[in-house]
Length: 94
Image 1 (cartoon, rainbow, N blue to C red):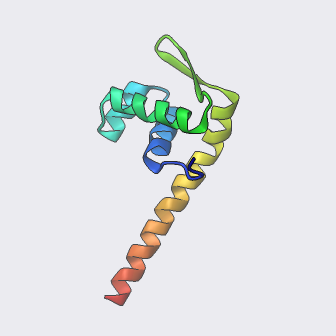
Image 2 (tube, one colour):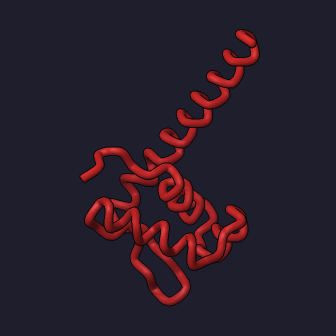
């Protein structure tokens, strides 16, 4: 069992939360709707809980989904900051 969340799955999750739709998230991420669904399903399996309630085409966050949504943007932001910082450092060293 991994204790680290998969960043691609987390990005798909955060995008679905932000845009409110698997289809819109897929468009934004340049993925198929199936790929986004698969990423969310994989994240839910990884965590062993549901993050969304699917109600037809609409999705609603479960309590666990709300908890993760509050942290996902911070986690992804820190990952972007780390990448930017490392790249800036590498440019100064080269």
